[in-house]
Length: 222
Ligand SMILES: *Cc1c(COP(=O)(O)O)cnc(C)c1O
Image (cartoon, rainbow, N blue to C red; front, side, top):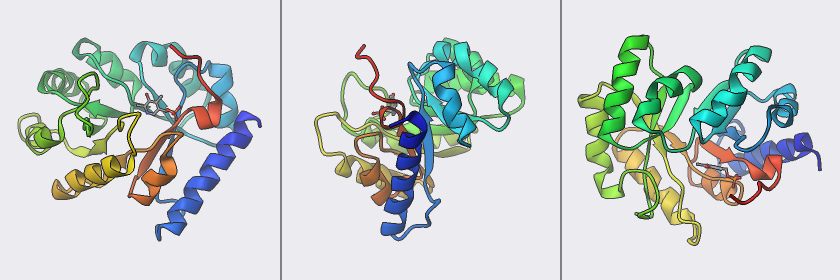
């Protein structure tokens, strides 16, 4: 199947799963994940009308998205990978949404640059729902305090939460946990679900799913 046919199949499945879950067909926004995909591989999906994309590295995004944004207005770019504080300024120049806010040192760096710029991107807090030592994100038990600090100390209007469940566990309980944390903090945006589990995420209330390989094909293993 072509990239565009795969893209259309994914959007169809998301809409079908939304309706099946009693949600509007357009309840869920697809973030098409383009890490490792070159600009010419991304373009057909933009030409097909898609506008929301995700990258997990600042440097890689910088190498292809300014040019793609020049070719097509209205692109919304999400950072879905860990952000180093010293790249806050570059990230703000490139991304419309940062999904991986997870520590106060990063908040401080972002706040400083947001202040200088005079406008803020949409911000999501990443939660390490599986408490995996190698994974970014705040621990579930620290999430409420961290969200409060983001809002209070840093003045951020946090949009919602993001998680990446452990690869070897059923994702459902992790998605449900993220939903609970969001609900008790009055947050509406839930970024959860990837190629293997986005239908489950839609059923459990995702507002954004991040899908790469199901659209663009398997990536080479790093
Ligand atoms: C790569 C990546 C995705 C997409 O993964 P696929 O399994 O290819 O759909 C989603 N979220 C994050 C944070 C990623 O790094």
